[in-house]
Length: 147
Image (cartoon, rainbow, N blue to C red; front, top):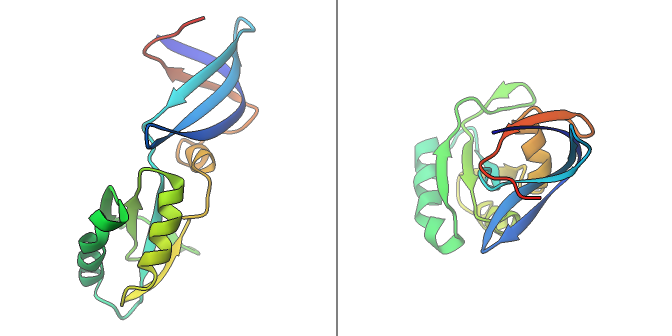
């Protein structure tokens, strides 16, 4: 089923230890709707020093994954910073708080230049990743709907 609605606001909540994005809006019939999307996980990017070996940095980060609660550590060849290509690692975590804590710990590893986007709210990333706009018309496929 497809739902069209006017997006009024969005936020993220932690439910059972994982983040989810909540989209608040009004549908075509004037009813208030709440769309919950648990698919987008909080993430941030780790940038190695230019002279560092990206694979070595990725190995060091992966070794810390379990102790920091990281879900995935993967190279993102398309990530650009200030228009320049990078050797960024995209790191996903179960919650935004976990991202902030992990970024603080990982910046101390050898070969790590900095972490970016760990301080962005998940709801803001949702809009950016899905090319959405607040206070605009949206459409999504939904699995179930209750009134």
